[in-house]
Amino acid sequence: QKRIKEKKSKGIGLSIRSQLILGFLIPVLLVIAVGTFAYKKAEEGMLKNYEDSAQTALQMTVKLLDYGFQTVDTDSIQIFSDTNVIDYVSNTYKNDIPSKSNVPTHAVNLISSKKNSNEFIHDIIIVVSDDLDDVATSTGKGSKEGYYERFMAESKSILDADDKADRWADEHPVLDERFHTSTDNYIMAQYRMVSTKNACVIIDISKEKIKSILEDLNLGEGSIISFVTKD
Image (cartoon, rainbow, N blue to C red; front, side, top):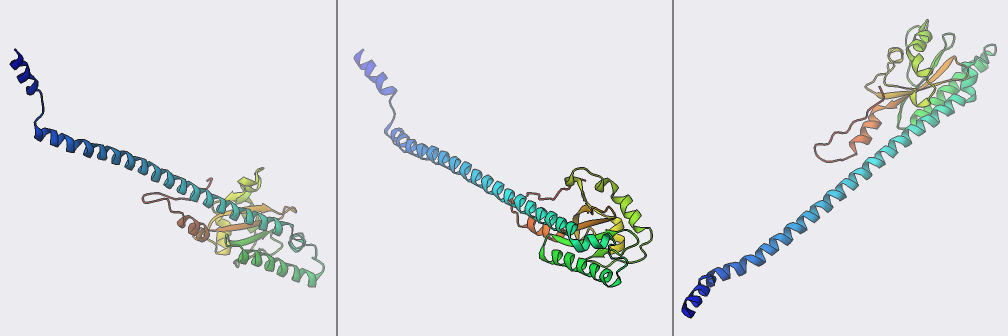
């Protein structure tokens, strides 16, 4: 019986070869397990860092766009409240010929200066009622007869908006027709009615500037970046 027990005990043992293989596999498996765990952690860390970087880049882009639109709004207010502009659209100097000829020149110089100093601006147009000439950074063409009424009809919903955030348009076909402007060059336009209610300041936002800002935003391969307006 003792011999039988000894044989049984030997029967469940591992051979030397098996023990060597097992002794080799255990540390290898441990190394693989540790390596896999470390890789997963590193991958998660890299993904988190990428997401954080992408989010930071996106936030900076939004802030840059907000800044650009704020400068446009500031320029619009300055034009809107400029004494020469108000005097011109109010026709203050209608009986003073020398002054009447100088005032629009000052207004043109002002809007040209605003356009040249702000990369977000492509064009500035001050549309005035038919008895006065428009003031713009681009040259108008054709007769003005009935033009102001056409412009007001096209822009009524924008100009009547209570919230200034709604005083933007994706396009203005009536202005495009007269001033050779195009949606190829502007991405949207801001409207501000002059207090006399017989003139409106329109500032076209440069499509090229917006496009260059978005092109600098790298969110990785396969990502789609677009500028979406309300309309």
